[in-house]
Image 1 (cartoon, rainbow, N blue to C red):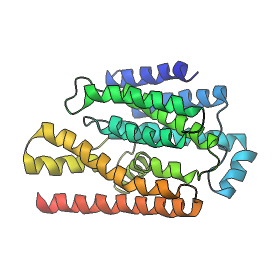
Image 2: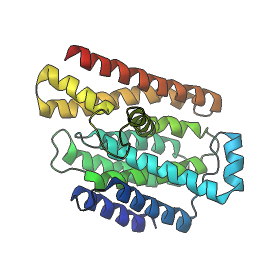
Image 3: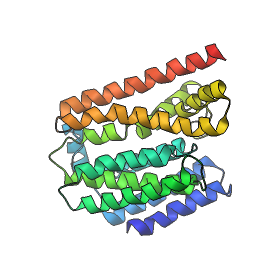
Image 4: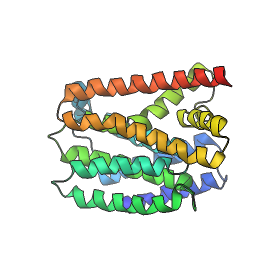
Length: 273
């Protein structure tokens, strides 16, 4: 079923890459339709969010559950598409996520699946980093985002002994990249559906390139720096992933760190150059 629904994501990504459909609203409508179809047919549900009030609403109202899962999928799929653009950035990020998921699923049936996906991504990276022999494109980004979202929900449902907030920590970069970008564009009165060049990874790229004046090296250096820092930030949470309270506090800390770094780098970019 998952493979069957991957085909429409590949198709939407292809028509986007080929500039056949350039209207972001049309693309968003297509993604929403595919995701809703998948949710209904697969009967996928989120058993526990780590927030009791939200759990009660999700369990009581099917429509709310549907919309909530839809937003989860949309956020991660678009987050994957946002950060794809530099050699290895998305695929290395996905590898880190699935290393953690493989560790979490060590004692259940999802272990082999997560290990297989991890192995597949590890093959792709040889062709995408540091010099890209091929690109993921929107097709790859949408499909990988779909895969991450789907597997995170399954992992969360299968491992009731750990806090669901650990998955918010694991996805904080993809999630907050979308949310922060949306809010930033709204404040600046820009269209949140249209891309711009002020994402965190683009600022980091420009700062690196201004210093070394080498676009190729700046490209994959950006991927290394972001993913190394991401790995450094999420690693501590592995040691307290059973504590809902600590996970919630740490998730908020990660959001604050991202916001602080973004404004510092943005200010430095304007001041320096």
